[in-house]
Length: 114
Image (cartoon, rainbow, N blue to C red):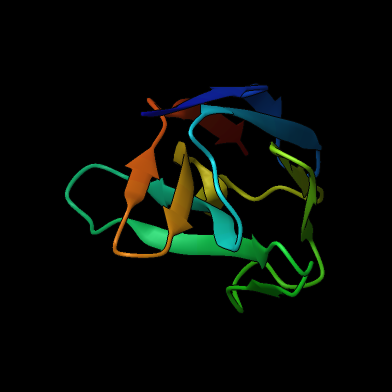
């Protein structure tokens, strides 16, 4: 089994910064992709950024230039700068391995006020 535990969410004003962390433990195998998704009530969960074990990254256009993703072994980070009210959501850590093994964290709330 795999456990993903997020931390670092909170409330900030627009223009502020936050750093999210996710710790993966258990049966984590390479290669894999770890990523951050977010969801607001009534909308589908959307990919924010992800990173492979070879450190290839990609981010949604809505956060490019403001968010950056990084990983160190089984730790995943999301540095968020110049936050906007539209970034308000529950942020989830995700891990995908081969053979369709897909895991999610419990989520951490990010609230950005104008």
